Length: 282
Image (tube, rainbow, N blue to C red; front, side, top):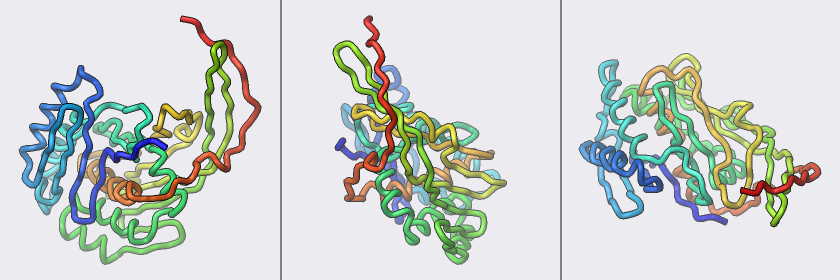
């Protein structure tokens, strides 16, 4: 099992913790500039090293306890610096729980890793964790909205909601494939497995974040590649919605990172017949 190092978490105390890795020398200077900018926010602590940096940001202190229409530009600046500090679409065998692969004006694309998948398969999203996630999503919209999210919180089946915020788990079929190499051939096997996935909604007209059908197909499950699949945004129009989603997922990764289960995600997979291809000779 690969090392579990969450890329980002958001604690119930309102602290966004980010693990920055320096994997691409070509973007190192840009990452350093972004970290310097993040360090200017109140309530931010950065511990930098030769291969990585750990960033701790007290979000209510850094961005203010209240937000309004004029506050969105400040949030966009923060998100720009956050995404520039991170490697794009990181690969490799390290289990990062979840990653912010790309933060755009239309929302965030996130990568999901085995530790998160094991946790959500086993526990779904417990009521208290759902409450934490919804309160996190309400935070960028001010204290009154956060209080309302706490007051109106409801659980129904596999979903939790509070006014315009919501979180749901969906059990679904994922199409998977694995590859094994010999000296002369590549053996590829396709299969299917049932996993759960998370669906988050924030303030707006169906401003949501989840796993669409394309993202549940053709998932490569190799030992040297921990990343499983992508979460994609829908109908996201402004920066506070983006931050809302990030904090909501961060609340989930905070709990998923501490999960102690070591279940085999492929134990119940149904595999087809292997196909053998000649190995490409360079």
